[in-house]
Image (cartoon, rainbow over all chains, first blue to last red; front, top):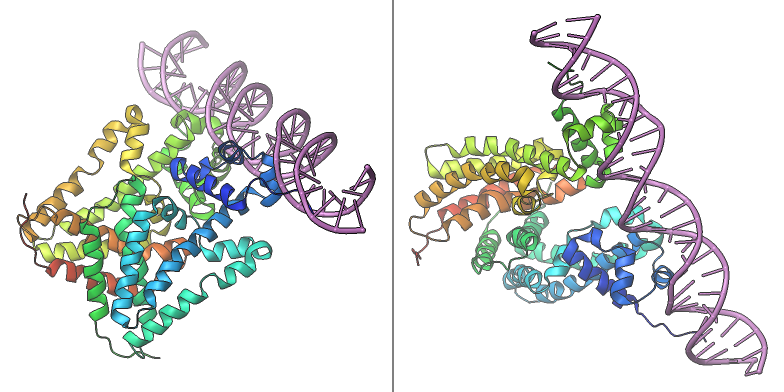
Length: 200
Length: 200
DNA sequence: TCCGTTCTAGAATACGGGTTCTATAACACT
DNA sequence: AGTGTTATAGAACCCGTATTCTAGAACGGA
C-alpha cells in the first residue's frame, strides 16, 4: 500500500532518551536525534508533529514501562508484601534504568494533559487508572476507613523511593546499598503504623 | 567615585526567580528579566557575564538562604530535637518559599563547581562546609562509630522532606497537613533506629 | 505499468534569545 | 569645571534550532 518505514517510532524515542540521558533534555534536539538515528529531520517530523510532543511521547512510554513492574509487584496477595515489593521495585527499576528514571521526573501528567489535550488527552486519561486503582485497593486493605490512606501509601511507595535515589540520578553514581535498606525500613515502618479512622 | 547603580544585583535575581517560578527556568531569559525589572540588557550583562552564571548565582543565593534556618535548627543542644527541628524546617521553608524551593533542585554544587570553577569555585567550595560539619557532628552523636550515619541523617533531614513536598512544588498546590506529619514520623523512626558500628 | 499512499531526504526558512557594541549619563574627587 | 569611573541604554549582531517545503523513492494494488 505504501512505502515501508525505515525508522520506527521507538528507534527515534530511544535516540532521544540516550541524548537526554547525557546532556539533559535540551540536548535532545531534532538535529541531534536525526544525527543519532540517521533519520532525516523530515522523517522525524513525519511522525511527531513537534519536538515537545516527541518528548512527551517519550515520557509516556517511560511511565508505561515503569508501571508494568510496579503493577506486577502490587498484585501480591498479601497487602504488606505487595507494598513492600512495589517500593523495592521502584528503587531497583530506577537503578537498572537510570536513563529512563531521569525522564520520569521531566513532566507531570496534568501539565501534559493541559497542554496537549487534543493530541495526548485520551492516552493520558487512562495512563494512571490501573495504578490508582491498585493503590486504592491496597490502601483500603491496609488502613480501612482512613481517608488519608492513599496519601500514606503514595508517600511510602513512590515519594520515599524516589527520594532515596534522586541524588544518585542527578550525579550519575549508582546508589550505595544502604539506600535500598533505608527505603525498606521506612516503608515497613509506614505500613506498620496504626491510624484512627478519619473518614470525614 | 562613579555612577550609582540603579538596579541592584538582588533585584535582578528576584526577577529571575519570579520568572522561573512561573514558566520554569527557561522563562527567565535576559529579555524577560530586562522587561520585568526595567533594567536594560546591558546593565544585566554588566553584572552577570552570562545568563547561565546569573542563574547559578540565583541558585547559590537560594541555597544560602535555606541553609540559614537549617543551621539554626541544628544548633539545638539535644541531637534528637535538633534533627527533628531541621527536618521540620526543611518542609516548612519549602512551603513558605515555594519559588525558591524549586530553584534548589535546579543545579548541584559539583556540576556548577566543575563548569564555573574560575568564577564560582571559591564560593562553592565553602557553600556546604557549615552544614556538613553540623551534620557530621550530629551523626556522630546519634550513631557513634557508624560509618553510614551521615547517609542516614541526610536521608532523614533532606531527602525525605524533599520527597514529601516534591509533588506539591511541581503542581503549585500547598501540601496537605499530613505531609508534615509523615515527615516527622519517618524522621523520628529513623533517628530512633539502632545500628551496629560498622567502622571499617 | 501506472497510481495512490506513505515515507525518506535534506535544503531553505523563521525566529527566539544570548551576547556584543557604542554612546551617553551620573556621580566623586581634585 | 574637568576627569575618571562605573552604570545605564538599547540597537545590532549572531547563531542554534525548530519547523516548513519541495522533491523524490519504495511499496501494494488496479
